[in-house]
Structure formats: structure tokens, C-alpha cells
Image (cartoon, rainbow, N blue to C red):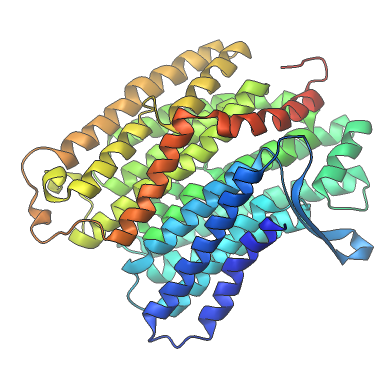
Length: 495
């Protein structure tokens, strides 16, 4: 069955359906959005559980769109993206459930939210370069609008301009790189599998690879908040509505990482070997610099935002290792961080809605006032520390082994120190400030999570624990696919 087509189309159809509902019927609008995202999640779970690991594309939908250009609407799943799609569907459902903080222009917001969800899921399911990029832009444009219209804080407009400029620049650089791939291959098709097959038989000219790969690396890297192009992320997430922050930080930001693994390394393997050393040092800057910035934060959203940027360093380091264990760990951390970021921003959104502030110095005693939200936040902060039992730990420890075996010993030592010391420092300080101590003045009229929001955030937490205790559910499929990428990039090595 074409599960991916159903998963992608349900939110887009929901956007159309919401457009026909009168704006005053808020419950119907929310019901359509939550229902569509819930059905997408159910289909994604069925697809994930029925996925067979045999090296072939599954749940494939391929329809000719423009014959003269070789454009196909091509959706398919393999070991790399099936887990990301499931993660995206879980986050999308949780974000839809947490969108009850929107009280004005509800109809317009939910139309954009559904479009964003459809674009995100379509980007990770696409096996055609054109639709791969198109779906990402379809998801990105609503992000700018949602922050500008429904964002919060005095810096909302500045955050909107900054995130628009940075992400537009990243998308433009990535587009130039993708066009370079298409032109240099001479392939009359945008099919990613076909392009990879052709490059494997007849590689792109080495000189061309030396400019294609950095364009893709920095273009996709800006979309992921690669240091020093990272400053848009904490500011943007702090100003974004809760559902928007959950979707962008949790899922859409992983598009750049996915693009480097799926497109940049296979298409320009020689360029990758030249530039991944640079990426490793920039990854270390993400971990070290952004971690130190997080230590100084007093606003919960800015702490989560800077922590999120720092965690991207793990994934970049895994990619820079260019071995099977490193790329496997990178994809695992992508999925784990997506669940964690959505959980953290969902909880911070609830706290902001209850108190109108995220000043951690005024949030003491949360566990006594809101035991459910407090317990969930405690587990989210522990997961952010890389505590064993959560999926983050499995991916991060894998990446450390990969970087060490790749010869990046100095970077590995500093990165491990950064994760263990700096990461633990800012997370433990947040736990002390928010969850314990005297009851903060902001909690006098605050209420705990509603059943719907608690269920949605509970799914995120449950997925973190399931993949933490059983990472093999993900790594079995990932390993086979990244092995092909490593063999293409380093024919002399098996690992």
C-alpha cells in the first residue's frame, strides 16, 4: 500500500478542508488538524512496523510529472528515512495537539500548520531532487509567516527577519549545489537513486566536486544552524509559537542533515573527503561555543534553543567521521533530538501559556505545582544530558566511537568533555532552578497539562525511551543504507 502518499497528503488535504470551515468554529478547525495528523501518525507507525530490510525501496509512489525534464513525483522509504518519517509524524501530532495557545486568526494558523506538516513529511519521503527541495520550501515559508504573525516577545519582528534571511541564504546555496549536481551528471532525471547510480559508475569531475560539496555543506549547514551561522535558531525558536518551534526545531531542521547524508556525500564523495575535516571542527564549535552560551541563559526557551544548536554538533561530527558507525549514529541522533526538541518546546510553551514568562529565576517548585509537566520536563532535561536509557545516549556514544576511529581524536576528547561537563552543567542548573526550591511567584494560578497535551507529549517521551532501550529498531535499517554511502565515498574501506 502507498502509505507514504497517504502520510503526506492527509495534512495537505486537511489544510484545504480547514479553508472551507468558518473561522469561528475553532473546535472543528482544531479537530480536523489533530485528526489528520493523528491518522498520518497511525499510517507512519504501520509503515515503520511493516518495513522490511532488504535494501530495496518500499511503499513507492512514482508518477511522471514533467516528461521533458524527467520529473517524477516519487515517494519511497528506505532504512534511513523510514525512522525519520515516523519521528516527523509523532512530532506533527504532538504539535497539532499543542496548538491550542493560538487564540486569534485560528483558521489561518491551522492552514499554515497543516501545510508545514505536509511539506516536512513530503521532503523526507521524496526521492526526486525537485520535490525534495520543493517540499522543504513548502514547509519553510509558513514558518516565517507564523513567527511574524503569531510569534511572541518584543524581538518577534527581528527574529522573523533574521530567520528569513539566514534560511533563505542556506536554501539558495543548497539549490545552487543541487543544480550543479544535475548539470554535472548530465542525467535527464531528478531521481536521487538514479543520480547516485550514475555517479557510482561515472563520478562527477573532481574539480566540480570541490565546489559542489561546500555549496551543499554550507547551504544545508545553515539550515541546520551550523556554527557560525547559528544565531538565527535560538532567537527564532524563542519567538515562535509552540507548535511552530516543535516542528521546526524537531523535524524541519533535520532536512539539512538529511540532505548532506542523502545527496551531498553520495554525489560528491571526493569533495566530501576534502571538506569533512572542516565540518568536524565547525561541529566542535557547535558543541563548545553554543554549550557555553546555553550556560549563561536565564530564559528557558533560549536555553533549549542554544542546547538544540549545540546538539547539532554531535550529528555533524558523526557525518564528518564518514564511516558506517558515525553515519548510523548521526541518523539516530537526528531522530532522538527531533523527539527531544519537540518535547522540550512543547513543555516550555505550556509553561509560557500558564505564566506569561520563561524566566527560570521565577519558576521554582514546578514539580510541586505541576507534577505531570514537571516530571516530563525533568525527563526531557535528563535526556538532553545524554542519560543512558534515552535514544540520545545511544546515538551520541556511537558518534564518539566513530570520530575516534576516524582519527579525530583531539576533537573527540574535547567534544566528549563538552557534552559531559558543559551539557550537564546547564541542564542541571535548569533542573535546580525550575523544578526544585521555593515555589515561584508565577505558579499561583498555573494548571497542569490537559489530557490531550499530556497524551501528545507522552508519545514523544515514550518514543525516546523505546528507541533508547531498543536502538536496534532504527539502526538495523540505517546501517545497510549508510554502508552503501560509505562504500561510494571510500571504495577502499568497508567501514
